[in-house]
Length: 156
Image (cartoon, rainbow, N blue to C red; front, side, top):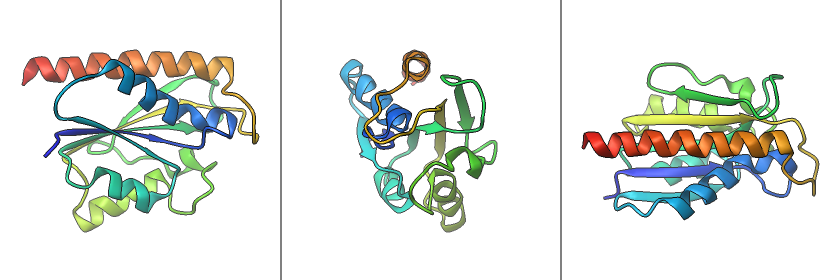
């Protein structure tokens, strides 16, 4: 059984909403480590729950919209705090990342460790590219996740 799954969430065809997918893709190109797998989901909570099934740890990457500075990187530990459902209000699905995490807690299927990285987005139009500010946030998130994973590997 793989230990960690890195899950990119979003729609690459909707501008900044592709941030989570882009983070996962960049990390996939940088990490060649046993026990680490990668998934991409398009925002449906049930799909997300399926992606993390059977893993000890999950890192979830998604665009967020909390009216903060575009490109700002948020890191949330779902075992230590609630994930604000309004972060993911741009999702086209009623059952978002936050609801999937809460449902996983209730039914006992949430991995032992759940870390959510959200990059503040602002441009979500169909066919738009990821904005420059969010591209910078993606680069920052990738470097932070790499440092975190390498730190975890050093402790194992």
